[in-house]
Amino acid sequence: MTFDESVYEYVKRIPCGKVTTYGMIARAIGRPRASRLVGNALHRNPTPVVVPCHRVVNREGRLAPAFAFGGPDVQASLLGAEGVEVQNGYVDLGKYLWEGN
Figure 1: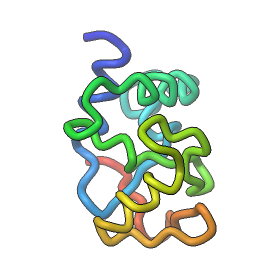
Figure 2: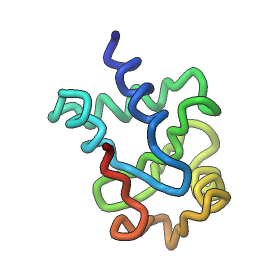
Figure 3: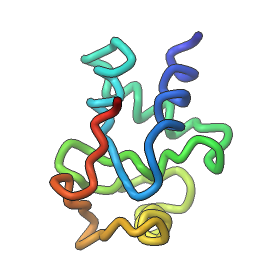
């Protein structure tokens, strides 16, 4: 499995109404120093409906400033539709973080 495929398979597991971070994905797939590569892979996501990359935020809960599928307003809208509150471009990780299983 390629790096990108590993990222996509992990992101598919993030439950609706939850988010995780680039760094947590990198650690979960065995590449703990590759959070930027995770972001690059998600930017190339060939199937954003199948791989819910909108559920990935940075370590502070900030939305992607260059969300590849419409910008941060679209990412906020997609998260909001799942019940995730976004305030000033941030998600409360204490409330919405999914740490995998």
